Length: 151
Image (cartoon, rainbow, N blue to C red):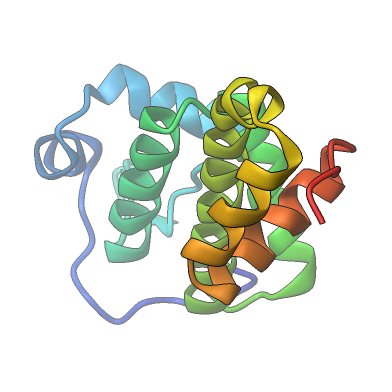
């Protein structure tokens, strides 16, 4: 997960990390087993120690779960992005961007029934009323979904 980089900040045992993240130690164990998290190192007593990056990653996982991503989808995104960028900050930005795009795609899908009921003239007026950038984003998402028939 970290490709050898070690955060110089504080290290937390699982109970401390659990309290800070607001999730149970069992959930941390589960996420670790899935490969979503990895301990930064082990203590002399063989306790797993986690760093601030792990705390940030847990918060991203919980945010993505709230946006209806499955743990498998989250793991796949992290794995794909870790292959692209070893830097956790870059990975976080890319994950956030991908998450926002997926949320927009869901929202466009929710609009589809309304948009499908519009007459062509109504759709053209709607697209003229919103900003060109917003219209372009909606059109691009509709194209990706194979539903473009507005322009």
